[in-house]
Length: 192
Image 1 (cartoon, rainbow, N blue to C red):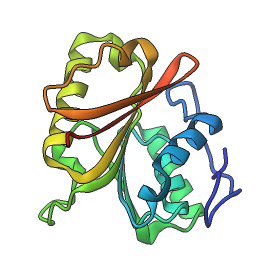
Image 2: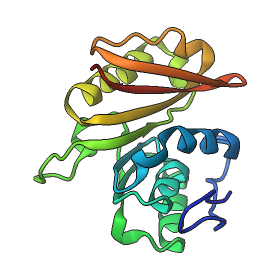
Image 3: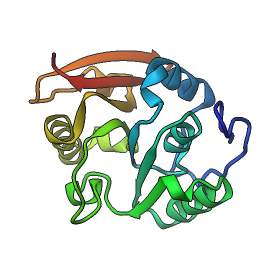
């Protein structure tokens, strides 16, 4: 895998071993960052279900101020920590072992809860197929939209196309979907 653009453009990084983590394909990541454009510069980024860190690392390469990576799986977490170290972005990155949907983990304990400019959310696609897990994901998205996203911020959700068609949130928001084969990116923002 590689960083596509920015100060680290072309640098390689590892994908976690096994089939449990599937990093975004380069073409989808390129489309994501083309859509985000200038929003990345000086952004505070939260990368949920971080895996290898491909989205947060790409954001740091393109000028994001800070990225907080949440990953629960031990193999992915070890790979993520190596990637952050190999790319020498430790000063702007914080890797946390925790559940991506745990509100307590979204910010540093006892720190000011400055809102996030960009939130990447790339759960395993099996989450969308389990009603309980899907509800927990949607509840977390509602909470992120209502209380943790900057006014002009965006949540970039990676989902199967069929799951995106069934996305139902309680929090009023803007929503834009872009399909890439059988998966899509859903961009969520605060309602204006």
